[in-house]
Image (cartoon, rainbow, N blue to C red; front, top):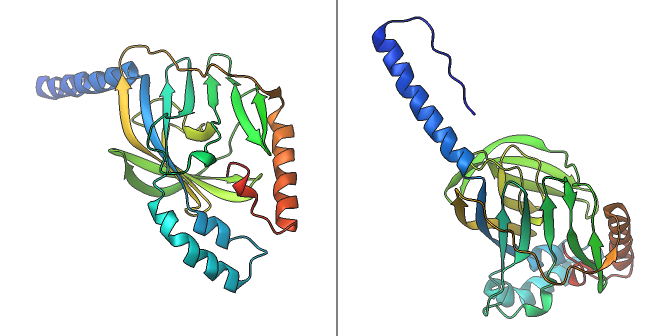
Length: 261
């Protein structure tokens, strides 16, 4: 809610202030009403980037990867995801489509659910072919605000940075304060507005909003039917993931063929 205090001044000044107050209250009311919505995202991995950063590859092997992978990388358009949110919570699910660009084998159907009233996660994650259910407090992410702006899906967005200590990479987020919810895709959130874009490790993975549909009325959050898996904490899951990445690289294998980046 915005508050404007009017005191003193002549009639003309007070009239102008009243107009500004009306406009401010109208805008804030519209934003307050739009606490629900559906955002479509596209998630795209740049496999040439990822592969050529593997420390065990020689320069010759990296050049060969670029040569052999360029065609199918250019044909790969990414995968669509749906982020649905309300005042009570949010869900982030893969969007079921007939057109999967030939990459159905990469789809792991990971699910990110947030219960804002209880401040809890209800996530489905996969690791080495095993399915895990993670129910715990929503993780707190340490963000560093940066002095950059750009437009994403019609919204002016500001840039923030954090570090993914599991994958040992930098993550950049683009968020807008015009959507009054501090959520976002892939379980990311905690910024003063909605995250509409994520960049993992300088374009290794790009996740950007393609369509934003705000609602003034409450909406139901879609929940997958099969929310089953071995219960585990994020601390344990992250420890297992770190171990898998380390062992894969030591064995000169790309870990991200088998796990989500």
